[in-house]
Amino acid sequence: MKDIQTIMVVDDDPNIANLVKLYLEKEGFDVNIQSSGDSALAAFTANPPALVLLDLMLPGMDGWQVCRAIRQQSSIPIIMLSAKDETFDKVLGLELGADDYVTKPFEGKELVARIKAVLRRTSAQDQTGLLSFPGLTVSIDKYEVRFQGNVIEMPPKELEVLYFLASHPNRVFTREQLLEQVWGFEFFGDSRTVDVHIKRLREKLTNTESLGWQIRTVWSVGYKFEVKQG
Figure (cartoon, rainbow, N blue to C red):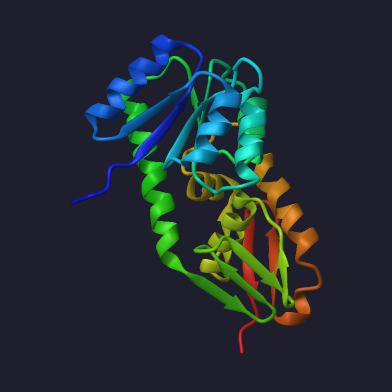
């Protein structure tokens, strides 16, 4: 028998929260509704769900703060909800560790489809295991990176960018492809969030060319995890 997955819906609008609950329960999910950031964090700590659907405009702690607090303790997927359809808000959400960003008003079926897509992707990631290169190991299972024998602290999305690139050595990916593959949706507009994550990775993984690999910029195209042949 398949385990029932719980989705935490964090929204102070009871009409939206209950409507989302109806859609999700129809698809076989259990739903935990929270109406504030503080209650959501308390409930999350007590009983972590499979995914958090997080509104940005909340009483008390706002969605940005809740996302940041969850990411400090867990890699459980987060989808942000907002009435703002602005590139800056999407980029900020992604940089804080959100897995997707849905703008209100939304179609219930589309929302459910995106929730299922994020759950499928994160479930698949959990099965892929460990990558090893000279001086570097990346475990998507443990969400752990070791470099030169030391554990390197990384937010989930930084680790996932590294893991995805290293899973396809010497293959070039555009910023848009990385957004789609790592964040899980097509992102139109400002793709600077990829550049930010690559910059942070390079700051943490230094002098790697001497080890036979590096995260390389391919100008006017994108990025690749370059491994020396032979």
